[in-house]
Image (cartoon, rainbow over all chains, first blue to last red; front, side, top):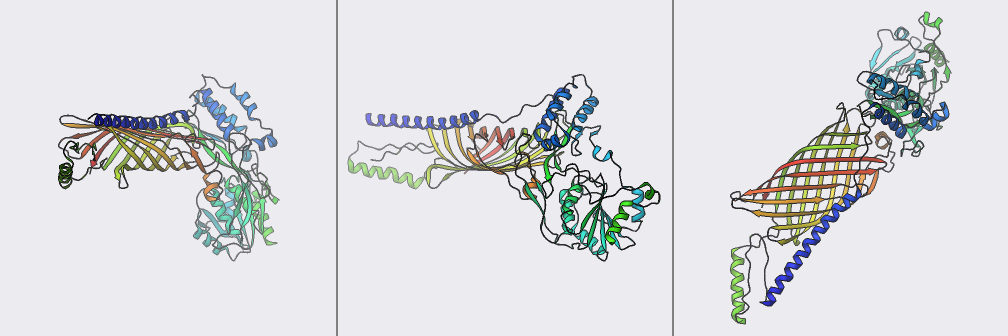
Length: 355
Length: 283
């Protein structure tokens, strides 16, 4: 009996020890978790000053062209902070806040930088508003007529000198490969091709790639791309190659003239960058508007959205195209031609393709 | 002499007749062990159970790749837990957990939404103890797999975040049965925390276009420890069984799921606080 009582005691002690071990394991799990701490952020208050601080820091930590624009236009974001922080006080109205914040963002001179509220879109469009338009819908209608064809968002026809003409006004939608095959097949008998992308504000980079792929028979280097790896102005990844692969559909083999103006921006600017690497291509018109930063989105405490350039893209010579691409032939629409319903840029391109 | 004293909720306590003479003692032992072995199989140390639960509650999302703002809203979740003894270890059990959830959250200004959803699978092997009557303690661990997404309805080139991770996670469970005249109350607490693993994340300012269209990888598969991903899942529950319900329990409880990550200079957290209602079936 004494032995039995001892064995019971030992058994209870063993069980107590196991319970303590189990509780210890649980305790260590929770302790490890607590020591590792919460992953959190300090949110800015929803006040005029809070929204200003939030916007300045979003741009400071994510915008990708500080080094480039410090060199190109003398931009100093810290100096911008000093100048604009004094303009905010708790008595400002929403409209006043929006105006001052937009003015601050305009210092970046970037068409990919916008502030979105329920009543307006803050923007800086000086990259095209400060220059002649070099494009007119009334002139375009003279060349297209009324019996032009429409496919995958493009308008196209054969001009009377057997030059094919395509107007591509946007890359906002995905292009249909079958549609592009039909366009190429229809224009195949032409001596040359004009691709008019004036006033094309961009859209999907993949659509620009899709279209450009019709103009190369082999894979070619067309540029470079990188992204930020941290909050510092100069923290970037290595430059990765952008390569254009030939389309598996019908590819154009003859000469091409791309028509551009200052409103050619973003994905359309990328299209020009790709096409300059393809054979038998000339660019005619005005310098493009640029826009070489893939934009990301964010927001302020008051719910206003903000867009900014986040991933910089470069041409094949590793040069930035943020402020535009110069044409091969700088041509502007003259008043005299316009009065005669002639588009000087189209006429120049037709003559070049006929040479 | 064999002294058998396996304590389970159902099996009787057995005593050896040590004072009887050796020969008669052996006959009596045979007699005592033979009849019970023909009349009744040995009960498992831990019963096999499966539990289906639905949870509703609050969710808080933070993903600095999408927005510096925290989003708050409602989450619904379905969870299935199965717990059964392992054949190759009397005190070992395997627990499998499948969870699916969806959350609809809003920013401070209530003018934008983030939608989140995902699936979680856990497999735990635990060692069980019964240190006291009605008390079950288990500890162990196993893999924890997560696949999900967070989608910001307003963003342009960074509209969504893919969530994918695989971890090794220790886990523990404590359960206490309190029988009354008509009901049995089973109080339970389970906890698990991922210790080490791997997860997917874009780099700080990297676009998904670069990763998936261009094939440019940059620290996208990251080895993690609890320091980088301090996360925890816990459930506090009470299962209730009426004496006439045989092996069916109704479960009420709280499920807290706190997932966090700080990688590639990005911060992420998903805090879920859910009231759960479920049914547990024993086998």
